[in-house]
Picture 1 (cartoon, rainbow, N blue to C red):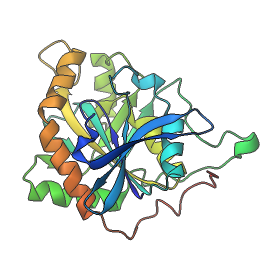
Picture 2 (picture 1 turned 135 degrees about the vertical axis):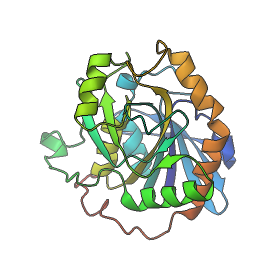
Picture 3 (picture 1 turned 120 degrees about the vertical axis):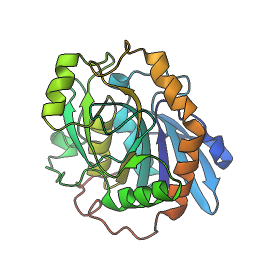
Picture 4 (picture 1 turned 60 degrees about the vertical axis):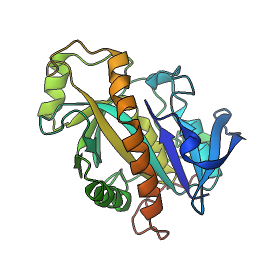
Length: 260
């Protein structure tokens, strides 16, 4: 099993895959429940980041358990979806953004597998946090499907679960941020530490605070994601089909000495 999907807001449907079965995976950070199905000749793991009923807020997601479980199953590549707000006027509602960098403004989350002691200490290179080979494939598929997309962008990750203030959004934009969300860190960090190729499909569901003409409401945020759900699922499957077997990137080479 080399492929996995982490479904964020609005992507809870593992039925896009066939022959689905449930799996429970024990990890040092707790048990993880996920689904495993088939797409064409591939087995694919499907994990819902916020739980089946979207009950787990972003700052309480058990990111370490989730990534450890995927690594334990033998997964090599992870496609993650995320609903984001836009700080960049060229990135509009419904656009796909294939982020290549992040700015971390989280505060209270476990951020690493390597905390010293039994887990050891390792400083992981993060020059390319999101797999360039996967992002290249995603860009090609989006063009073929005529989807409005951006081949790169800077993801600003905040603690949540509240939305950001207009002052914060102005500051993030000055720092070079393009989109803002609450889940990419530490998920991308842990995936990179574990040697997984990881890429995020960020879907713009709102303009960020101060740029939006309306008050930000979580339900509306999810509604845009759900509206684009079929298009997003079709895109995910097309990307899965096109990912090459050989990994021609540095994601594994820069990984830490994680023993799963």
